[in-house]
Amino acid sequence: MAGAIIENMSTKKLVIVGVILLLFQAAAFMVGGLIAPSTTTAVQYLATKCVDTTKLRQEAKWFMPWGPNQCDKIRTFDEAMAKKIEANNIVFAVHMPLPNKEMSPWFQFMLVILQFDIAFKMYNQIEDGAMATIDVGLAYRDDTVSEWTEMAHSFEQRKLNCNFTAATTFENEGRYYECDPLPFMEVGSVAHKYYLLNIRLPVNERKKVNVGIGEIKDIRLVSIHQNGGFTKVWFAMKTFLTPSILIIMIWYWRRITLMRRPPVLLEKVILALGISMTFINIPVEWFSVGFNWTWMLLFGDIRQGIFYSMLLSFWIIFCGEHLMFYWMHPCPQHVARCTHSHQDQTERNRFSVYWKQVGPIVFGSFCLFIFDMCERGVQLTNPFYSIWASDVGTELAMAFIIVAGICAVLYFLFLCFMVFQVFRNISGKRTSLPAMSKARRLHYEGLIFRFKFLMLVTLTCAAMTVIFFIISQVNEGHWHWGEHTVQVNSAFFTGIYGMWNLYVFAIMFLYAPSHKRYGDDQSTGQCITGDTGANSGEDIQLTTTITHVDGPTEIYKMTGKGAQE
Image 1: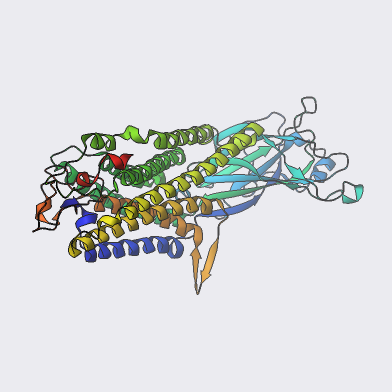
Image 2 (image 1 turned 120 degrees about the horizontal axis):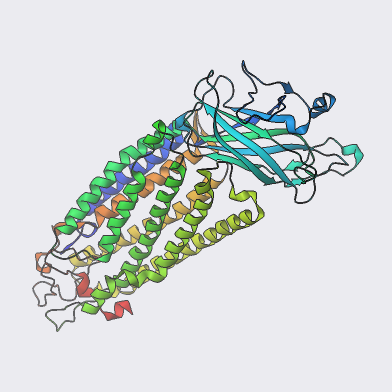
């Protein structure tokens, strides 16, 4: 038999390969958990209240909260009222990072969350549906003496969602509302050392601008950026894994092209999976360290979307092909030669057979791409834009997330059902095994175990992928293990990323055509009858590819019309 490597490789060698892959998987988790720091860092800032004393508004003027050229400051709004300073002349200034620190391109991105400190006043309460209008500007520089260069400027609106837990009485005046944090800014590249935010809350009673938003006491910001140490570990993993997947992909396709027939569907899909894995592996992020590429976040999302679409589609086709062809269809005892159905071969080699399963995956990926473009695409020109800032945008975003979650669960359940069907088909046809000779029976029992194990590995990868998305949405966490601190999120990021690469590597390796043959009398694609070989009705192949250079092998001797039905 000239089959795939998974069929013909000895059990000892397969165990060695499995142990090596398992060690690499453990190393991927340990790199993130023990070597890399946490994925992100959050830094809190309290905005400084600066006073704009100029009579004519100068767009190019920037207010520094500290340093040699710091602005004229006030501590409270009561002080502003005593000095007869109007609200329109107050600028909230925030310098990022904190004094004596620098930002770095290794931080990759900067996400800023805004929090208002609003005091309760009986005659100045927050109205229902209150909107805060914010005049905000962002500037940067790369040393402490240069002038600030404007990076972005915008007028934004954010809906206040605040709750006052105490009784609304005069006795409780001065107590603070509990307000939800507001999305404020996202920058896809941290190419400069220093950033400065100037925030104004313009008041216009005639146009109802910033009226009914309560008495704002302070503005707090939380800046979140990727840790430089984690970025270096992440880049190193990409750099190491890229040639590994590229080499195995070239080796796999070379073996396919050496055959005298065109590639079948599953072989093409495996190649496409390898290409998508290589595409996401290529460490183009190295260039973001030296160039101000603000589109890297969007590009990364697109790469991940392509890979996820390909991975989900591959699992469907992979299980579907095995579901269709995991049937033991022995040759009748009185027939000296059995042939496969040409119609079955044609049906199995068409991508259109899976359009009902793959179509929703492609459509869902396209919807997520549109959703991502609606936010991060706009943020390329306006980093203060957020789809969560409006009621319609929030409802749309929540709808996308809920639908995506439901689809993910349904997909996983459907994949489990397909794997169950494969197992049932294999178990239902095991009745053919007792009629075989002992050696051949043990051989095919080993094949069945190998493919069942591979199916379980596939389900495990799918489950871990779903868990990864859940874990990545929760807060940063870490566990203490003796004297070491295990970074849970970092371990999952590197571990799941390593798992995807190892899974793709294993699939391309195990499903490559094998040069080893099990029984030379099988190589002609015929079922041999007679009393000498004990081969009658015993030909079974579990791979769904035609791996013999001279044509079809055992799979077509065991598949029939009943398999597809």
